[in-house]
Each structure stands twice: as structure tokens, then as C-alpha cells.
Image (cartoon, rainbow over all chains, first blue to last red; front, side, top):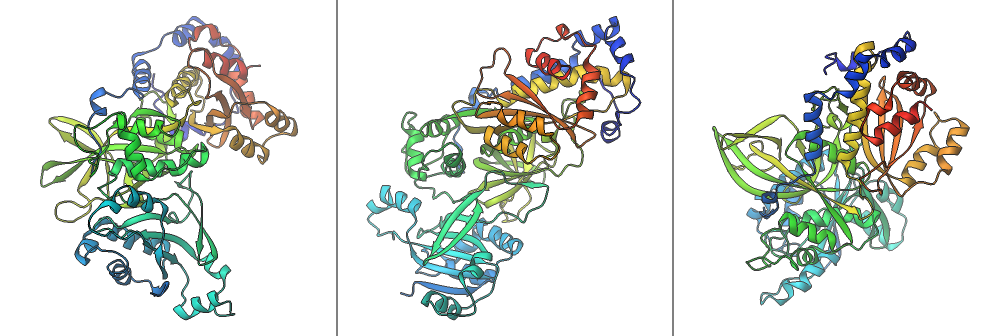
Amino acid sequence: MDINNDFDQQQTKHFDNIDFVEIVNWLKSDEAITKIETIDESEKEASEKIREMSYVKPEDLKIPYSL
Amino acid sequence: MIPFEIVDYTFENFLHILAKPEVSVASNTIIKKKLHSTYFQEYFDIIGVKTIIVEYEYVDKDYLEDFSAYYVRSFKPYRRFCTRLHFFTSEFTNKDFATLLSGNKGKIDKDFLSKSYLGFVVVKPLPQTLVGRTCLVTYPDDERRVFPFIRKYPVNLFGISLEVHTIAFQEQDNVVAACASSAIWVAFQATGKIFQHGIPSPVEITKAATINLPYPDRYFPNKGLTSEQIAHAIRSQGLEPFLIDAKAYINFKSAVYSYLTAKIPLILGFSLFEIKNGTTRFLGKHAVTVTGFSLGEEKPIDYFNTDFYLTASRIDKIYVHDDQVGPFARMKFDNVDVTIIKASYSSLSTSWYDNDHKIGSVRAVPEILITPLYHKIRIPFNKLLEYAKEFNRVYNEIAEKFKLPLLEWDIHLVQVSDLKLELIDNPSLTEAQRLKYLTTSLPKFIWKLTCLVNPVEKIDFIFDATDIEQGSSYIQKITYNNQLAGFFKNVFSGLNTDLIDEPNVVEMIKDLIV
């Protein structure tokens, strides 16, 4: 998923004029359930990158830091 | 011999002091060629040094440990006393200082010296590696630069109490210690304070590192430490080493931000390459201690291409104690890749000299970060990243549909005492909120996920950092703004949390809609 908006512009949008009833109703729809239940490839890749952060290859552990 | 001397600061005068036979045994040529000299020249200009007090015959504990373990048994009579150079922003003379010490009223007093004190450099009586324990003030304060674990070092100069807020630095001597031992020594300066352990000297660190992982070669002169040996040295102080793959910028920045903000240092291991005239030359592997960072990027960067924005991604520079360069040396995330045998690697700029004695063409390719943790800090930083990313994913599905504001995540470790200090003075909290948060019993170490919107309004989600990874370690939310809390409550109130697998995220959302 990519909202594809300029970060500043998108982040500083105000909370006013949001129809929360519409959000509640949408969250109960099949479209919302499918979207939330289905994790797309880019999200899976991101999760994989995060999990691998604490994996260090054994060969990186053997050479001395010596300069 | 006179016990002190006052010298007006010029770079030439500084070099002249270092080359004095009663100060060091290094030659003029060696002193001028040292990268530290170039570094100090620039640094002293930035911090505004005007006057130097030279304190002769100074006994330095760390050098004395190294001296008693190694140098004393040499046939050549190495000296056991060092010289300590003190730096000030004010101007005064030998006569002014002598008048002060004799107890007479003169141009300067103790308060005058204390206010203009910038710290000290211990000069070791060794032929090449003369920069001993160094405690100098950090770069002048600004909002971008963060040096979280600097602490107070009290200094006694002939009975005058002075202090400097910094983290100590020293150059490896290539005999009892290599770069890695120096990096560990710097890291212990910080962890010794927050996790309450002794601070061993470089020679003791090298011995602890190699005792169970012997080299095929001799220990001294020391030829460096592997990551495994660094880990052993960390364990010798009752701490647990946590290893992080630092090859990608985002891993590096997230780890530095998460732990350094909690005053926990990181040791960075990298390879150095000289890139010149189209050729790449490997120089060797080096270790330094990360002591600070700068949040210089205007906007957070979406490293995951999923509209997942981390405050850590705003880091544009780190500051390191690099024993071959100096304290608080800058390394920049400038998006330059280094190609090695057809593969590209992210790299950082350095202040190292190249073959022609010029700065600018030596690049650092980061490999690992090792952070010494208190054994009860069990949940690693990337677990929290996973929780934040999953929350962000669910929220973004709604945000995309209804054009809601995007979120930025500030993820860092915090000690309960620091969290409560922050809360007691926070004017955004109501009386009831303050009372509730301050009196809640919490673990000593907490992961804090701060969700920023708009972009200064925030809500904190706190997690028990001492818990186990399975299940949920979520504790509670901390709200500072009722409008934001209401916004999240309304956004998620229709969500079926059974659709989310991650139990921590389920608890975060349930807590929001209570």
C-alpha cells in the first residue's frame, strides 16, 4: 500500500471534518476486512527487513577490528 | 621542575607543548602527522580555547594500569607520570594563576576558572600514541545534536574543583590495546554509570576479551579484537552484548536512536576504504563508539516504502569517539555507496587521512553494532519496530481510504525514573492523568513507542523491556492530548481486532478504544 502523499502535507491534516461514523461502517465492510487481513508484499518485505536487523552473519564475527 | 605552566592558546603553542621532552617522547614529525593534531586544531577553534594550563607530573589511573601491566617490564625506562593539559575560554597569565594558588586576591578566582573550563587532555609519555584520557566539552548545544550519555567528570587542579560534562576518550596505544579495546573502554564510561559496574583499563579489557577466546598469535602487542572477543569483554562486566546488523542505514539509525536515547552506547564495527581516482582500496577494519547523533533531516525517510516513518530516519550524522581521529568525530549518512567486487554497500563519510594525507576520500562501510545491555533488558529494539509497523499498516489502510494524517514513530528505550521525571513536569497532563501515571508500578526499563501526529501532538505506548518476547509486553498508553486520544478512539472503534495477529498491537488498539 502506498498513500503516495507528501509527508508534511499529509501528516499535518487536521482532525476536523472527519466522518467517524463512515469509518466505523467501512471497517465492518468486506473491503476493509480483506484489506486489514491481507498483508501485501511490500509490508511482508518490510517485516522481514526488521526481523533480520538482529541477524549477524557468522563470518562477520571472526575478523578482528584492528586499525 | 615547576609543577605548572600557563600558555596562550595557538595551535603552534599546543604542538610545541606536546613535543616538549618533559611532556612526551614523541618526535615533532610524529606529532604533526597525527590525525589527532588536525582534529584538535579544528575542535579547539569550535569550542573557543584561549588558554592552556600544563599540569606536569600527573598520575593517570588508566595509564598507570597499562604501565604496570606492560611497560614497567621493558628494559627501556618508560616514565610513569603523564602531563595533563587543561583548556579554558578565558585569558590569564602564569602570574594570575600563581596568585590564585597562593591565596592572594588577584585578577582571577576559582569561579572565573570554573566558568571558562573546557576540559583536559592527558598526554602519555609514549613514542607515538600520546593521547591519553581526554575529557573535552561537546560541540555547542543546538536542538539537532544529541549527546545523551555525557556525564559530569569532576577535576581537581591543585585544589581547585572544576568539572566537565562529556564522555572520556583515549587513543589506543597499539601495544596493550587496539581500536576495539578503546571503543569498549569508552562504552564502559557510560554503562559503568547507568548499570553500576567498575571501569577497567584498556589492558584489563584486552585481557578479559581474550581470556576464553585465545588468538593463534600473541596478545600483546595487541592486533585487535573480533566481535566475539568484544562480546566477551562486555560479559566480563556482567552485561549482555546485543549484536545488530548495521549494513543498512535504517538498521543503523533505528538502533542508534533507540539505545543512545536511553544513554546506552553502541560500538560500531566497519571496514574502511580509500576511494580515489576510480579505485577502491581496503584499509582495514575499525571499531569506534557512537556517542551522539544529529537529527538533521527535515522530514523522516520512508526506508521501508510502506509509509512507515521513523524519527530515527531523520538522523543525518553520528558523532563517534574514534581513537584514531578524536572525540565526537563526525560521520555523515551522505548516501554514497561503495562498490566492492560488483556489490554495492551503504557507507558513511569519515575524517580519516588518505594516502596523500588528505581528508575526504576514506569511506566507512558499516558492518555491526554491539550494544552492552543490562541483562534484564530482554526485548530487542526491532520487536518494537515490528509492533509499530503493524499498527501503522492497519492505520494506513483506514488513512488511505479517509485521507487521515500520517503517523511518525519515535521508538526508544527509557528508564522508569527518567520517564517519571518527564511526566511530573509535563504541563499537558491533567491532575488525574499525572497522578495515575506517576503512581503506576512499572519495570525499570521501558520501551516507549511515541506516535506523533500533526506533527507535535503525541501519544505514548509503553512496553515492558524486561519481559520475554512471546506474548504481549504492552503495559499502557500515556495520553497528553484529549483530542488526539479521541481521534484514535473514533478511528479504531469499529475495528475487529481478531483480524490482527500481533497480540501487542491488539492490546494497543483495545487500549485506545476503551
